Image (cartoon, rainbow, N blue to C red; front, side, top):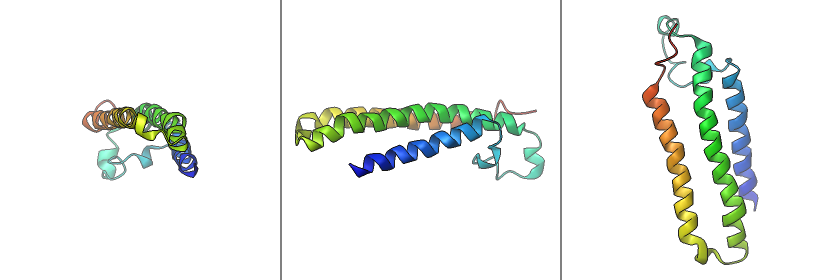
Length: 119
């Protein structure tokens, strides 16, 4: 189904963003850091900010890959075979669990902030 390829495209874009962050050159893409004043940004090591965001993005990428893989290899065949009613509860629970994992990682990233990125 076409929407699976759209989801894999989103995962690919996310992985590219992770690579940019992990190289230490993506601090301008980190929300919250790029909106700080020049004086506030000078207090932080931009490479550390970028790498810290990259680490959280790796965890989110793992969740996205798990979610898209599960949908492609479990939900789509159930839809195509018209047996989705047999797997409806399982698909819902697994998909919500993976989404909860992604949200939890994002919340931890927000709570942690730039705490360990000061110069």
